[in-house]
Length: 417
Image 1 (cartoon, helix red, strand yellow):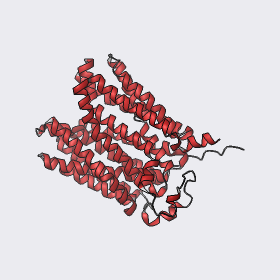
Image 2 (image 1 turned 45 degrees about the horizontal axis):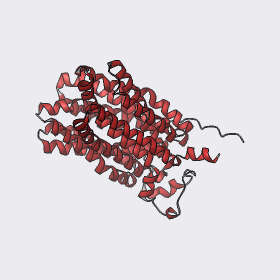
Image 3 (image 1 turned 45 degrees about the vertical axis):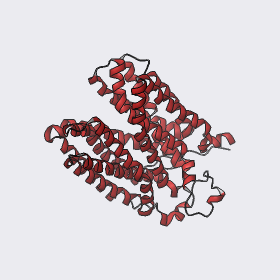
Image 4 (image 1 turned 90 degrees about the vertical axis):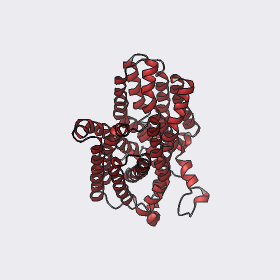
């Protein structure tokens, strides 16, 4: 019996529009992130206050992620996306006008809340429009578009905006870009038909590899516990990455300076090497995942990435450290689009918005708990202990993917063959 040919890759209008939206909003994120610490420092905010504001931002993501899934189902992803883009625009527009902690905290909280609404909406639309054979590839381009925005934003901020008009102008520019993204989405996207009102029509022809349990039969919605069980490996993956990402942004430069004797100015390049690894290998990992199975690729990336993190302790030369950071970006950062693709494969169409809400909540939870725990390990233990505990997290995820290997339909199909 001949093996069915893999369907050709197709980009419909909605996918292209979402790429444009996430690139533009990514530039807006890059603009604000690149100047927020400088802006707050000029207002005499302490480092403790800045750390607290980071937690407030993550709290906004966590608390509003699940409601974002509900809003997506009720209003459709397009309407939710438009509302959240405009809400984000208002948050960053008013941010420079607050000079004291309470006002800044409120702006940062709703910044996180509207941001997660943007992410859930974009990911739901992409997974809905991407065919099963190319989900990881589609999501890798989404991740690359965000990464490009994060790279372009700081460049625009440093070269054009801040020298000409100061840090406040970066937030105003970000608000304008968010409005541009909303215009692109408003005129470019069709009205998404992913809502509670028509889930029955969407259920026709759903993926036959998703097993409906007896207690689900006839239910209008899949139970939340079932949705979470199906996407548990993706949720663990994004929690680990959020934990790692938020921790290394703060503590890896300190580790390099204190334990490796690297000049403070050189640590600026570390982020660029990490981003370069992500950009160059996200698409490669996605193609391999679509062909051989998403979970097995996540397992390999996690194991290699964990070994890479542990190697940070061994390297003393700056160029070796940069190479290791590049490899960390090429492995750990590329897990995200592959995990989203797996989520799209194992989740019913009617459950996509809720699944994406869970996914982003776990990402924010990692961002929220990572820095405090890492700071304690660093302060009470040592720099190497902090590095090793990050590696241990991804070794734990690697073991998790072995234990729940059957969560990937590709793996189950190979066992049956």
